[in-house]
Length: 501
Ligand SMILES: *Cc1c(COP(=O)(O)O)cnc(C)c1O
Image 1 (cartoon, rainbow, N blue to C red):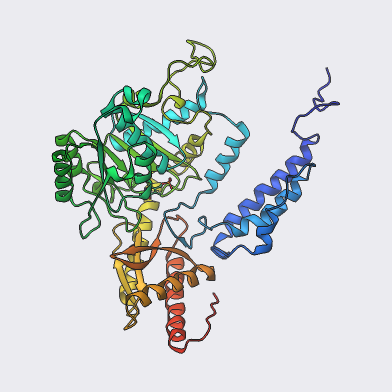
Image 2: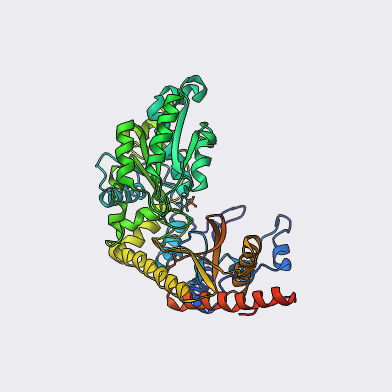
């Protein structure tokens, strides 16, 4: 039989000439190695020009094109205009930098193209291996279940749904929340991520039923206020069912007292979920892990491998103490087409699709497995500790600069500061700092983001990238001082401003 499957009428998408593809593929791989090797010499971010944006408004390509051309467009028009989180000068929001190992693992994942919704295949054992490692890391029992999801937004939603299933029973899945007379209330600090409120909304429980508990001076949940809020809701005939602790708040990196929350949850019979999106994996850093004490008592933990542990996007995860409850929250019986078998390809039930809303799922576990196998948990922990040390260094430099004001100390790896506005007043100082932030971003030197601290606009530097050193910290701070000086002077003279790196 002839081996040419691309005979007349064949529709296969593989190449006629593998040698040519191989050479092109090697060029693509080399380009990405070059990109990563030289990344610190590029601008962190540059505003996408209009003419580049326009390239991506063309109509559907009907005819075949060349891979080399598409690759060229990627190199020239896409790669330079990404947000820059792989760059060591990126300090905005909460974003990991990715690694060369993760990149290569992604290539293997793409080549295999495994769908890990279920079935009898080792890729699912790899995912279970990660669950086992996470049980070990967080001191969870063998019965605990785990699931890869897009990110912590989804992992928090799953936590809320598991808690909802626990309190309302199987009926909630059939009849919905309307069928139950109890009005459920949940609790999280006001510093909790916005996706926690959204999870309450999506779960049909309502954002208002998430009570925002004030924080103390360090940004952690005020526990007296939590007790008061629970008591007030009970007195009003409502049913408290869930408390969400934050391990690493997005604004300043505060950690709630998880042991105290676990005690309250136990006494009040509440489900205890932890949003540890980035902070939970600080368990890998021996000098930080003690601050997470109490996390081992959570009913569920949401976190992201794509943040502090640098796994390529996306790689969120949820760990649930009671694996049976987790299964009871999502598994369905009456599937004909997804029926399970004792042997063969449809065996090895339960499947990951029984633990969450997704059926088709990518093989996120592989890049995570590679990251842990190649770098090891200790080195990942050292990266985490190093970013915290850099934040302390940045804090010292801010404290040493009379033009700058520290707005929140580096509890972990996040520092919030601003340029002092002098006699300008609060609104003008906010405006000045908003301008300064944009000036730093547009210079390409560094990319911090902003937040509000006690109502003040803060420039927020979150050091998550494993490539960051004092070189980028100094560059960011020097840019802040230089542009800050220019802004203050031009505000005084009212002249147009221009910034260069
Ligand atoms: C990043 C983050 C989230 C959201 O996680 P995604 O992975 O972006 O969905 C939630 N909570 C905290 C504390 C975070 O840092």
